[in-house]
Amino acid sequence: MPIAIAPTLLLGLLIVLLIVLGALESHRHRRHRDGIPIRIHVNGTRGKSSVVRLVAAALRAHGVRTYAKTTGSQARLIAPDATELPVYRPGLTNVLEQLRMIRIAARDDAEALVIECMALQPRLQALCELRLVRSTHGVITNAWPDHLDVMGPTRKDVALALLGTTPVGATLFTGEKEALPLFAAACRDRGSELVAVGDDPAIDDATMARFAYLEHRDNVALALAVTDALGIPRETALDGMTRAAPDVGALREHDVAFFGRQISFVNGFAANDPVATERVWRLALDRHPDCATRIMVLNCRLDRHDRSRQLGAALVEWPRADHYFLVGSGTYALAQTAVRAGLPATALVPLEGESAGAVFEELMGAAGPSALVVGAGNIAGTGLELARLFANRAVPNERTERAA
Image (cartoon, rainbow, N blue to C red; front, side, top):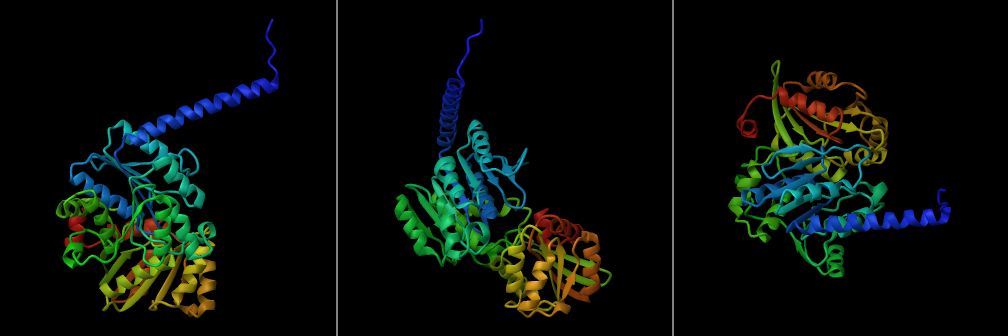
């Protein structure tokens, strides 16, 4: 005769079982995590993926068995031999995938893990540091106004959200300049040392020319500050950094000759907030002052209306382009805001929903004898396709040959 179990008792047993299983999983994770001696957690508004790759490359060059994980334009797990593996996601993006990355690294006897924070919600950012990574070295690249719908509404709120990844009893490195008092307070609260990284005169033009793509000096300075603290000789670190493969969204430049036209294309599609986009735009203008036509391609997303409006409002404050090509989806929000802010409607070229090939043809028609084309807004979809199209048509030069 079967034994009847009261529903309340069954529920109680189930709860106890879940608690036990949770405790075992937590213990297993801590054992994996703490078995990796060097754990570097990289957060910030811009430059996270680049800094992860730079620091990991320096560690590899120094003979440290290193795993790295980027979220960036395309999530990647980078093995100790620099092989890159796509991060499989069976469903929606979830910060718990960091557990899997830590487990893989630990089981392969990693001596170091450099991991990019993938959380946006302020509480999740703190959870990732305090429960998942527990870093020995924390990095916050910068705290610029972005994802204001989640971390905002102000730049101060963004800084406070990012500071959720301040390590406990360790060292926090940052390239942020405006919110340093907040950073200092967060480090005092968690008993950590703050290292504010400024301009490094040793990182000169000759140093930057060693990179096969357009890396930002701020990223290199920040990465070198971390590797200095780890005792890696600078030349060893720089040798590793300059030989490392960049993120797919890294700032790249391609020269294209098209039926007598000379086109310089700068892939800045990973720059998707006003501060980063302005920096890319001004850098490109400084590098190509003699181009007859200046074109900005803005790749929009229907689900990022706030970001599109921020860019639209900011465009009028920057040096003007001759044409603004609007591609992707949800371009009306950017166009409406830009025109209301004072940008001539005639400068806008609406190409929403058009293929990369069609956009390329339109660009060539507007280019004239020489043109600078700068992509920004978002790397996904049309942005990535257009970047690949220009890369495939690029004229080989010293920079692209070193990148190959």
